[in-house]
Every structure is written in structure tokens, then in C-alpha cells.
Image (cartoon, rainbow, N blue to C red; front, side):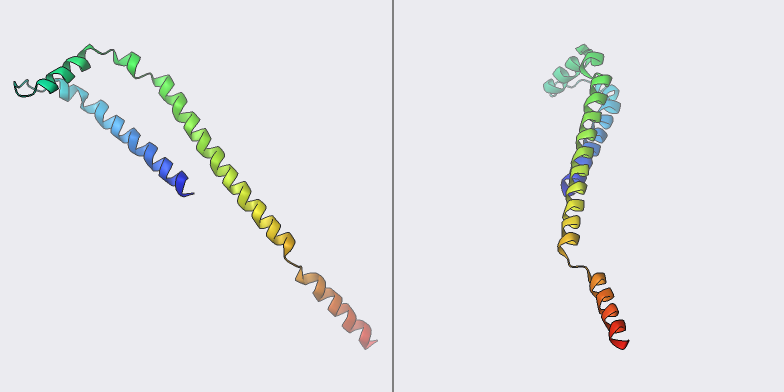
Length: 113
């Protein structure tokens, strides 16, 4: 259960980071060039040269996301089935008190006759 919660939190966090970076890319491109920031210049040039439609394929992203959700769903379903099976075995192993109640009641009524 904790792995499920941690996985969902990780996915949501990563999605949030991707959204923030995607929204800030135009602002990064428009930043003024400074001679001290040679690395930033190279990053900006790389960003401008990239064809982002090829790098960030929406269908591929959605397919991977749905596959991960499906895997999480299967894992949680498996955990639920194991718990239910465990509860069934406990119930079978536990003696039934109702049978004893009715037999005692039957014995008491037969003794009174």
C-alpha cells in the first residue's frame, strides 16, 4: 500500500516538474545573454535547435503513463486478493460458535421433556 502511495506521489511530482519546465522554456529562451553564462548560451541554442515535437511525443507519453497506471492497478488488485484470501482462511480455521449454540439449545430442550 505504501509503495502504491509513493509511486502515485512520484508520478504526480514528475508530471508537475515537466509542466513547470515546459511553461518556463519560452522565458529561458528570451533571457539576455551574459558573457559569464556560456553554459546557459549552449543550453539556449540546444533548446532552439531541438524539434520538440519529436522529443516529446504526446502519444508515447500517454501510452507509458497508462501502462504505469495499469501496472499500479494490477498490483493493488493483487494485494486486495491476497488480503481477502487471508481473511477467508482465518474464517475457515476459526470454529463456528453458532453450531455450538444450537446444539446446546437442543440439548436443553430435550432435557426439559
